[in-house]
Length: 394
Image (cartoon, rainbow, N blue to C red; front, side):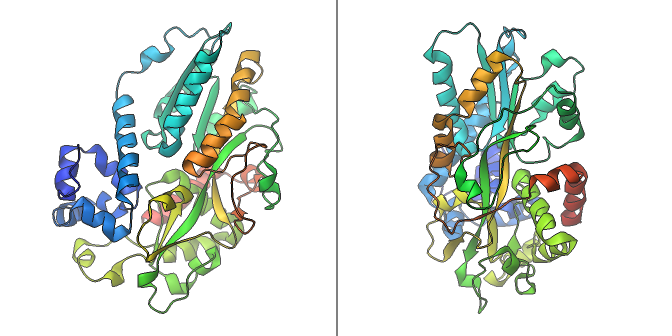
């Protein structure tokens, strides 16, 4: 049990896993060891949450889910697939955003137990914070039988790396021909892969959280163009610790605004400050945080305003690929693309679903900004990500 009135440093020392959660949920500066040492010993977790305007109860629920996931996935999982029959059964592996992983896993478990089948389903869905190293290891094998039948993950880096692209080129993985929710089409966003290599199950929209108390005469930024203006130089917090979202942001900014847009975003980037700067006045704080849409549910401070960009929330897609030539695999992908799964994406975590029957409950003015399939297929995504990461970490 965590005492929210303890100093952050003491909390992290007693449970190091908490630091990862804090860094990924609005406290990026604590990832700096000196910052943690100095600031962490001065403020309690309650004070930090109040300063950020974060709802304590929702934060605690999400933290408990995260810690439960860390404990669950620190165990040896080699036995999950020990009875797997490569010719008949279906192996599902992937990573999912923490807010939807637990309800989605529970729903899949119910599906597995719901009827007697001529094949078994083996499922291993980890929280996105755990990364995809185990899936990479599977795919680096020369034995195709060791590859999962279905893979799902957020972000661009994994699916558009050379290894996965080579397996798609060989016809080992592909996507089913699913109809995409018309809500995306009416917003001029076509998420359907014209080559049917990848299927997008849902998305993570990137929006702004603006600390209006720090605007200091500036107009409220309502678009990505506003955010790239000189007015917000050094005042924008970018989710570098959330690589999936970071990659989506830099790729989309590059696709829409060119290299000039990337340079402007780099200019807007709020640097990790030296501890001596951090203890000074609010003038050194970021005014705008680029955040996943679901994070807005934790806001309670009236000075923090969630802004859905007028030119569209940048899309970080959640992809799925499969060995769809096998009938048993198709049966499972049909379920993973069902309305039941889509509603978990949409309602439980504010991750709009592409399922054609799901109402994502978004207003007409909530538009999207999508990098586009032409851009994806005509650029070296892996190299671009490496180039932009280097630019932002210098």
